[in-house]
Image (cartoon, rainbow, N blue to C red; front, side, top):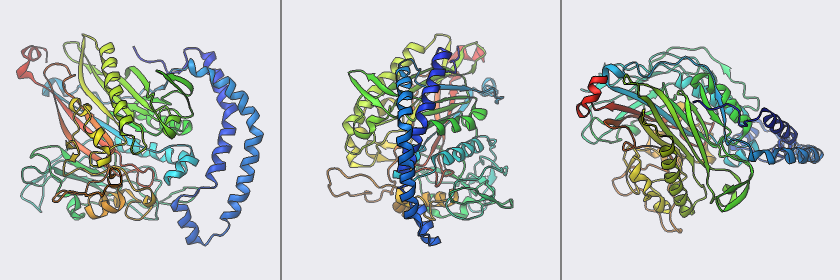
Length: 581
């Protein structure tokens, strides 16, 4: 049974809720602009210096007066809207569901013959706060960013997933397959400098490596024939598309040393989102209008979208009760129908984090049917944990809740006639695996339950790992302001030290990082985890590819990550399965 689309069981309640928000919104928007007009991003300050514009103080002065007056005038109307809107939050389901009819390729096509199926997942933190608050993170224009991000994700995941093998003239090994060899024209990026780019030819370079080294994939060349124009109007100018071919061996050698086990998963530092992604989980989509724009862009691609996830106003969370100004910021787009969905709000947020309804979203999706008429399903969980540094105990408590809530959700919704083919947990955990200050979280029992493909152990990353948190003051510098430049920066260890956030020391103690002989990784706070023991019998999971995505350069302060899992039915261990396949 599929979910209903409306957040309210009654159309009348939904209409009242919409009316209340319409009355509230003008006052909210004037307040947002009042703050935003006083805060500039580093890019805007640089543009004013280059253009020798000295009118900005006048703009701030008169803009502040104008929006303050409008805010005060609209406040009485907003109060009426609030009195109508707030009580209805108790009747609201904590998410909205968009379902669009989409023709998708059957994932079961090769299952009968090969006994194997693959699933792709992506997680990204977008910092889509109201514009005034996003500017504290050196990011502005939230609505425009949402539009470009939606188009960028749709473009990347809609590419065909083509795999070929070609001989590498530079090594005795073989280049593994490319993700896509088809030039693809797409929408313009919200970039940072005027630079023309060429369509991508994607080459996965898997040169023969010693034991313990990860195969390296590099997706080079943007597929967007545009020039980046970071003006207030954000009107990119198109340029002539010129087909081109760039081999990853022509890039810097900064990423070639990244180890894993021989024959392990491919590492991909890509200027495009992975092709044929099954589920995308986004965090910090706090702005309702930005969420609607993302849903509009991704709905026709994925078919099933959960957005506006979370609770508002005064909501009881266990023994606590606090006013929530923002929802959870979680957003999920799936190619597979959502059978069940459940949201839990963390009750122990503190400080500014207590103003948002951060929590856990758990979904059960329907994949297809096996020949034995067992329904193939998957479980997907996304979270956004407490953010302030030094609050490791709060995050550990939240991880305890996550473990408990996931077990409850799967116990209640598991059916005998189902085959569970994946169980994934992802999101912004707000702690890393290299900072001494995050030692408590690094040793949490959740990592005994779920497998982190990037983790060698508590406090120790695998050598090929790259941090996912960018330094906010440098977001618009040349080395990171385009997908291609950010890609090369991530592949160069010395540049990563400049543009990625470093580990956090404990109690102001001197930080010794990295240890001798270890690479410089940076803070990896965005996770994609999976587990096998909850899957149906005789199913085996292995990681095919792990991806760092640079397509959103200049649009967010996080590096999106992707994971592709291969799920194999162990026919040798299940004689009954041989008869049914």
